[in-house]
Image (tube, rainbow, N blue to C red; front, side, top):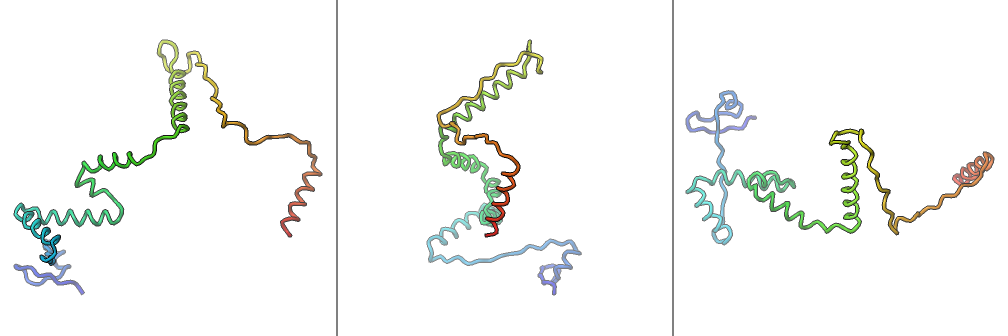
Length: 176
């Protein structure tokens, strides 16, 4: 059953009638404030001030949009209503990031050096781009003490019979 709405000029009409007539209906929502509660009393005073400035309805709409967006974990409406909050938020988040470790700083330096070397190789004689110029000598990677080999590779001589025997032993061990 279609929900009935009342319009002072047209009387009772259904929602589907309103859509076909292309008439606009306004909804009014009432709520209570407990003036014995100091927080709600202050809210009532703020509402009165907003109504004087004709900002109450827009403030309620924006507030509901903002609360619903924040409850969904999104910040889009917050940043749209208060653009300066985005910059403050990004600064705050950046301050929470830990300082770079020595390894990260060394890696960034090496990447910057590689980028510079690649740019030098791309520019040939007289500033011409391309591989026409002499190739720049690139230094090999810098080895640190902690870059020592962790695995020792040894070469052994194994024939097919040993490989087959090892395979069969492995399969038998799986069955047990």
